[in-house]
Length: 456
Image (cartoon, rainbow, N blue to C red):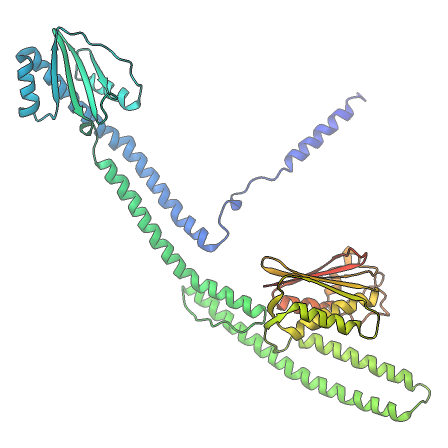
């Protein structure tokens, strides 16, 4: 029993692994756009109706009509065979061409034996043999391959062989082609009308999505009219009201912050002047340092609360912007910031806001490391910018938390050398305001990598 235990465990493991195999879902095959899904909803029932109609037509109507046409041909051939026995060849030819309007060509060969050539075995030939055999009682043979467009039937009579040649159109009806052309044509027309209608109905939704995306990226407002279906009109009206409320709140907050900035900076300036007039007394240097720290803290708070203000996006060369920020960071110290760029980096951005974002990321790296390496490249639809430092880095469990306002790390970063915990928060706010995203990872230099992507 002890030897059997190791053999049962892999089997259970194999069963568990087999159960965890992902199943194919219908959602993977459905279109991702609303237009595509709506078109599938319209086209699927239309296609099913056409398939069912075609099946009913060919399974019942077509089989019945084909059978009657073949029975008619068999009856005509049987009538010719009977006339041959009574009136001989001339009478049979007269009946087939003049009286009965059979559209047949008959030829009687006296004292001949029916030679049975090999059958092709086609479905048409088998059905024709079965149906004509119900009317023609004598031995016969059907040949559908010797002359294209014609059917040759040979019947063994008592004193010879009757050969009858009939056109294939006697066994077919144009109703089939009319039915197919009508159903396909109507389906194409209905599908075209549905496509035009769907596009017109989806235009307001696309314009609403573009306006929402533009407003979320704080670009110029996209003109938006209230139109479309009732539900779309309600959504558009609600969005416009929401946008107006948010813009009023931003305007009120900006005005309030301007007043707060003036009220806070005025006493701080007086305090700095008074400290300068006191001279080199005990404690003056410490007080001056505290006032400077307070001024920097207030400025950082105001920068976070102010956001990006009313700055409008303009085409900006990120290569020049990054090198300007790096030059400012390298001022007064050895070259610690290196910039490497690739491709055309001119995109519409808010340069002042993005400059503040880049400055925060570089200062964050220099505060905890000795070097910062900046790289920028243009991808298909985005521009990727990375900031690598050689500092201690941040634990993976804390990389999302550092983006929260006023959050400061206790172990991975020294809180005494850090700011108030708004640098990365402002950076993410700026990047998301441009429609991009920022995330943290391990840097090749051994520290932290801040990678951000901006839409082109």
